[in-house]
Length: 269
Image 1 (cartoon, one colour):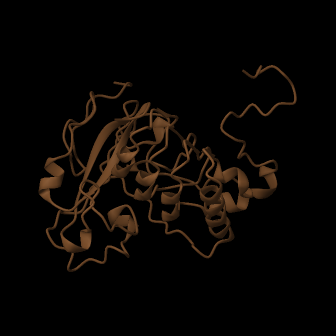
Image 2 (image 1 turned 90 degrees about the vertical axis):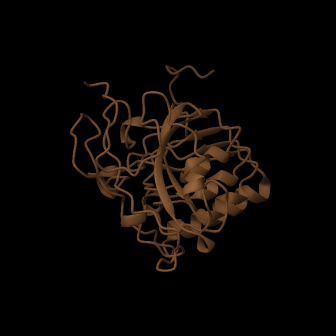
Image 3 (image 1 turned 30 degrees about the vertical axis):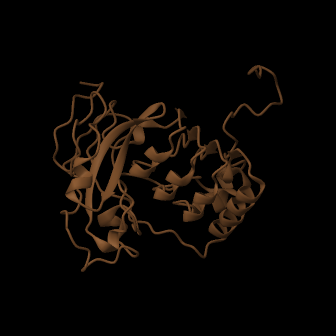
């Protein structure tokens, strides 16, 4: 155990991603005004972050290399942001699908990230035991596929940043109407402002291709490891929505579409 009073040691247990010269480089995260994360301030509507990942950015290209390296050497702990410069870290607003290669990783550290979404491929990280996206204040929700990480037992999340969190009960974005066909929708090129992500290919519940069925989006809040997380479900049918478990205690008990939906009282009430 490290003595916190001992001088000269890095006391950041999750990896130091702070900027050594913020006055010259600017903030490490972009601003987020989705809702007030310091006190209750109910709003009629909140929305998804509309940013798209710039896949030509140097940070993105560097991140792809780091993931390939981690997959090749079979490491059990992955701290990708510590391998990026402050400028590169700020360029990363999601993770690439290639995180599905990280089947040996037991601890994923995303401390202080600029992320606005996590891809469903996190569900392929079957060895994951600990997840640390702490102080990622623009990360308000997670994909339902994270529940496929059966060994995940520990998490450190900034709960005040989450939709529907018990402290402040901010609202959830209103989801699009369900459809039994995606004939008029390109699941590989979605508008993140409307759908939350830019791509969805498989059902979050049964893994059936969305292209062969429909798209039924719902929210559900479940305990994942240490925290209750708001999970976005991209289901292929009403039957898959009906197969979802009940919501966590003291949260909305059933899957829902967000928007004007009644929530339990916040800790501030």
